[in-house]
Image (cartoon, rainbow, N blue to C red; front, side):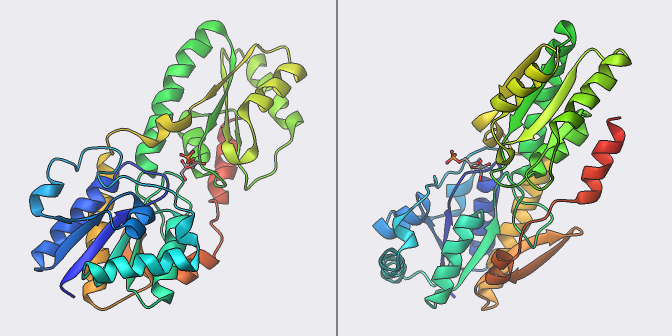
Length: 319
Ligand code: F6P
């Protein structure tokens, strides 16, 4: 293989730049040319493609976002869109592709592989919801952003003796809420993977108040529903003054943490290694701190699971 392509797709995540850098440098180290595809699958279809050199990826390892930009592309979900994409890949003489993104991006990578085009997926999403890897690129940074925000909310919550509902991202996955809730000692953590009872939330709030707690934090993963609705229900069910903060896209930006930069560098380089070994239709990941790879089809057929022990622990520690 003498020429590969790289693209980022779906929601961006901090560390994607570090992954692009690793793909480019690892490939050039092995005398392989790299072409950057801009705006994800949309740029693949339209041919928004340029050669990347060693210097093209200089000074980006510490930057959030993605220098290749990203998009969610409906046209690529069609057979016609996929064929156009393959025509472009052939036109540019690209023989293998690294796709950095979440599950939607992986579905695209799987389609290209089905059409006979060697593609490797690198998991990049703040949601941490890709089966086959313990962590996705961007999760650690987003987690720390959420923790920083909650630490600040705690200050004002304590001053005013208020209850705060904080809604975090994660689409259908509760990892961000669970980890942030555990890291911040939240009273209750509401995630889509576990049922919750409003009476239980109220009981926990009352218990904290009875022992003189000055503030309470309730973490809500967006997949559970609107934090605003949950805040209103709490306000109706108690006499605790309640406020709601929806953290939103602030969670997707910022300079990647050291953990994410290292993870991105390792996974990006591994993806190139697999392409050069002639592998296709794989997703790279990290499990127990070892680099691994699986069939993308297998990863996509599995359901992401929450660490239920961790959820139980969060409940035990917030008595
Ligand atoms: O998948 C990453 C993510 O940030 C999810 O947590 C969230 O549900 C979604 O993307 C938001 O997407 P958009 O930026 O397109 O609104």
